[in-house]
Image (tube, rainbow, N blue to C red; front, side, top):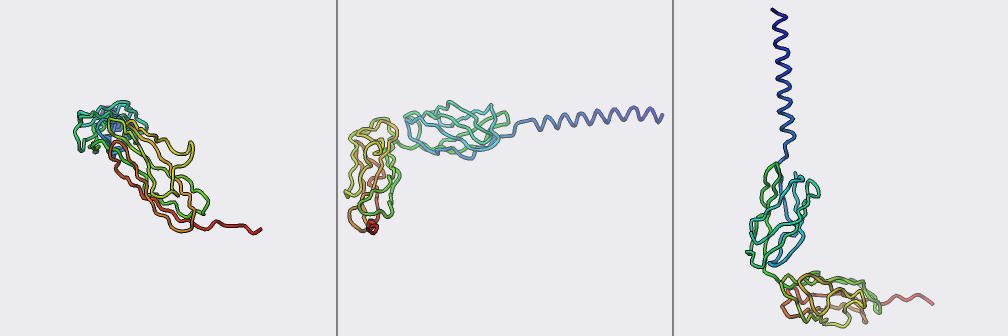
Length: 233
């Protein structure tokens, strides 16, 4: 009888252990619920199409991206890594202004929401104020770049940069930047240099005008002119 009982209980224990191992393996293989910490850029204007980056954890290859605002279409979703997804947001001109909720869904579940904010289309300049530091008279500083953004659905015409002091000006030739007289929806650059002629501090402004108001203009400019060093002869 003792031998029979041993023959019965040992296989049962092995079977129970195998069942527990199978259950544990199944649990460990299940995908974890994704988290979404932020969307970059966090905001854009109506009518824009832009590449966005979503950052979080537990992203897997079957991930999809959803936005609560129906005026935003999501395409080109690519899982770059377990922490990064890239996608394209196409925003209708009629999309509702304000914060929309963005979520990521995988086989493990759906993340909490991160905000993506829709704002009115604008024309604005960024990159200021610009401080050129100390530059010797007769020399020209390295260029500093301003970025002109047009997030409207129409071209900005009649772009005119005006400097309040002649010692500040656009860099010459191909180094002047990409802004011309007209800017279709998108961005362009204005490269500014400082070429002092007399010793002292020089404060000035750059005013950018066009067919629409340019937010961020005028841009403050500052630099100090120093004596040009002379080698003994």
